Image 1: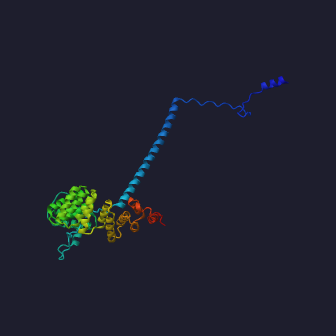
Image 2: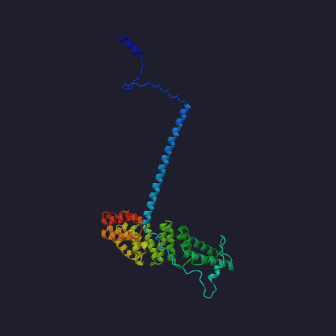
Image 3: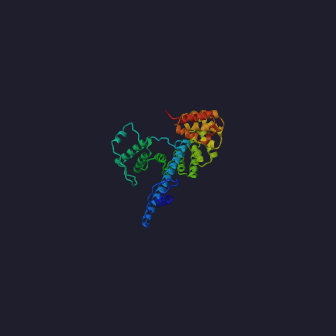
Amino acid sequence: MRKGSEAGRQTMPTRSRDIYGTRERTRPEEPPPPAMDEATWLRKTSRNRWSVAIAVAAFILFAVIFAVILLVQRQMLQAARRAAESPATHDPLPVEVTPRPPLLTIDPEGQLVLDELADLAAALPPDEDGPYPLTPHWIQQAAIQLRLADAAYGNGEWRAALTHYRAAVRILPGIEGLAATMGICALRLRDFEEAERIFTQALETEEERRAALLNNLAVARMGREHYAEAREAIAEAIAEDPEYAPARQNLGVLHFRTGDMEAAAEAFAEAAEVAPLGAEHIHVYAVTLLRLERWAEAAEVLRQSGERYPDAAPIHFRRAEALARKPDPAGAIEALRRAVSLVDPPRAMLWLSRSGYDPLREQPEFQQIVSELTQPRR
């Protein structure tokens, strides 16, 4: 029996066991993967490399776009902050814009009636130089061009006005008193080089209102950042008329732009003695005093100006800054509340981001103003 049992055990098929000792059927072995030839391997490797390259390129492109967006947003924020903090909403340089009498008026005897000219079609003269023959046609055309120029000038259409004035001058080069008006048009168009040429030429031929012409020449030169030449023109204007306020105001602006704050403060103080400063020049004067850390003077100048210009938000913002540094936190908060009531919340927040208001940031009233500005509107 034992031998038979041993024989039986020897003839039983061998079965594989798993690691737990349980029996299971023998599974056929999987055939090895076919050998990859070199061409197939290269093709798959190349495909993988292209996928990686595309992914890397997409990541780099995304990073570049994101960086550009951040840069643009930063520039827009800086531009908005500069606009909010700008010493003037417009160019503060005073330009002599005293309107001259219209070159065309209605004659009471009916010898020249503008309505009759209105029926005539305007025709620009050729580009070549005149003078043109003094025929009725060209005399009428000169009158039409002057009428169109004066209308455009009155509407602030500087380019159209300059075009029509130039046409009139080509027809009748001897028209007096027109150069100054053309120069003002060029200044408004910020064509400072052309304005400088016009005012320089006008000073060679015109004897009246030289202080105004010199002042406007200085404005054109300052627009070109030719500050030394601009200062010479301002000095000549003041010598021509020591009481001519625009030239003295421009002297203060010139010193401000060149960074000489002490000279700017002195020039603005002298200009204020000659004639009251406008809101824009008061703002520049105040900024000058603030940069010199003359807090009390700045606060007083701005207090007086705030009474004259109650709706000029920059004056109240600057006064709050001066009072915060004085220090007069209560007065600063009062001025600040007035200022933020005159502008929209985003512009107000740009102002409040200035370091000049740091002494107020721990004040509950300041924090309340910020909270009110940041609350969503309903």
